[in-house]
Image (cartoon, rainbow, N blue to C red):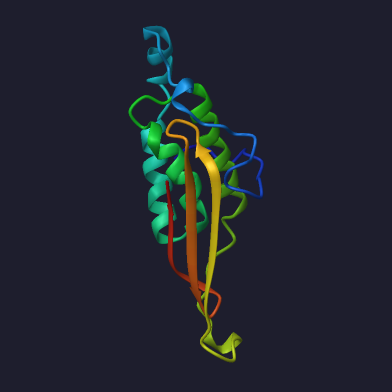
Length: 143
């Protein structure tokens, strides 16, 4: 649907060099017109579906790009394209719940945060993921 067949794969859904903010949103009519031809909201909606059902690792990246649905800029579309590169490279990966591979039913939680990661509101972004028998059962990324 989004022509990712020719994309090179990347190993991380959101690279550290991307710094998204409202400053990147188009301000002139010309910029808004050129961005209207990019299916930003369609791609982000598809990414949301993938995140919820098969790719919890996209949660943080999705939370970053979904903030700019109302007025995405070129920088925002570059990040969405990067995420599609990641999806392309991870099509053969999946989360598997296999209780036979664990001796106990361990619940594990991983937590991460970045201080001041939201450049518009100057607040921290934190995320967590809970796993049962090494498979994700709950996750969230929020500012």
